[in-house]
Length: 131
Image (cartoon, rainbow, N blue to C red; front, side):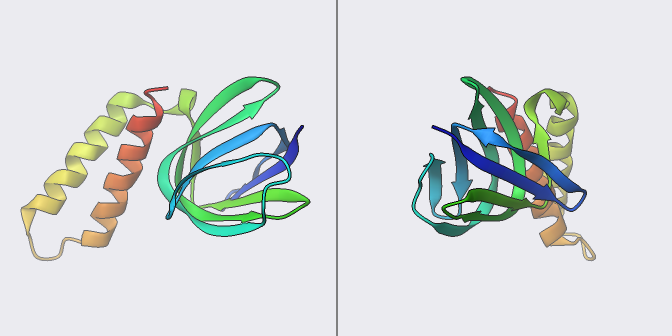
């Protein structure tokens, strides 16, 4: 049994297809969504996500957003999304190191929130590449 999954990013519609399952990390923890799931609205964490489509598992790095589960479909409104095979692991590791250094520096003028978000994005990419 399948359900319609729609993923929208600031760049437009990223994904609009039938899938068998979606596993995603929400602010309340990981959830697996299957067809006929109970309606749900929640905040998406910076973390790996995977979908099962035609029996094949595909991994993505998500960078925050919201989920809306209805009887008709599941809609993800994400800040950013990357498929695992699009991620440059070495670049993600360097970004993680830069963000950690910024957070440790205690220099005036450092945008702490921006550095934290950069760290979350890098960690999500690194974790997603493990699959």
